[in-house]
Amino acid sequence: MEIDDALISRLEKLARLKLDASERADLRNDLNSMLEMIEKLGSAELEGVVPLEYPGKHQAIPRKDEAKGMIPTGEALKNAPEADFPFFQVPKVIKK
Image (cartoon, rainbow, N blue to C red; front, side, top):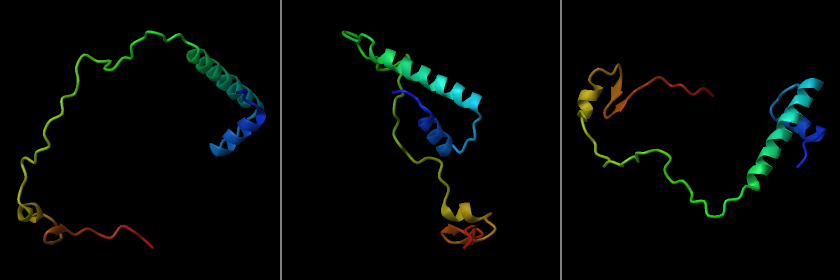
């Protein structure tokens, strides 16, 4: 795939950018360099390479999802400026 002026113009429009001629040339060169790098990676010899599953030494051990330290609803609403049991009342924030 070659990066041409039409693609640069489309990217410019999508990203809402206004680039001058030198910036367009720099962007074209950078994108072409990235595509070349990706093509090189695609041609790498991977025969017999074992995929790396865990890059770190430790794995996260999942824990049980247990509710702890809960307070009763009435206690939670005790200091609320406004409440309609069992809910907190807050000012309306959505405008029409």
